[in-house]
Length: 84
Image 1 (tube, one colour):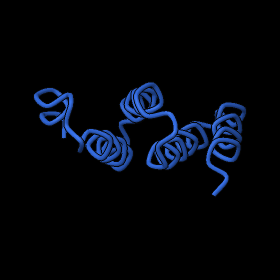
Image 2 (cartoon, one colour):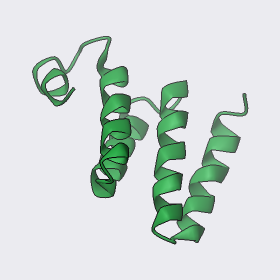
Image 3 (tube, helix red, strand yellow):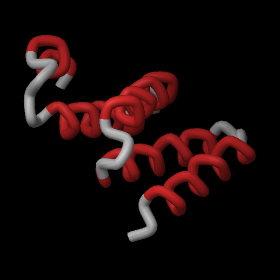
C-alpha cells in the first residue's frame, strides 16, 4: 500500500490504500502511523465514508492510550460528519 501511495499519487485506489495502511498499522499497534495516515485521509478525502471509518480507528487508538478527551473529539467528529 505504501508503494501504491508513493508511485501512483493520482490512483483511484488511493483512498483504499490509505485506509488499509491505517488498518495494518492499527493491527501492528503502530499507533503513531495510524494517526499520521488518518490525518492524511482527512486532508485528502474529508467527506469520504472510508475516512469516517479511519477516524474511528484513530479514536480507538486514543482510547487505548487513555487519551479519552481526544477520543471523544474524534467520535463526535464522526457522528457529525458521517451521520449515516
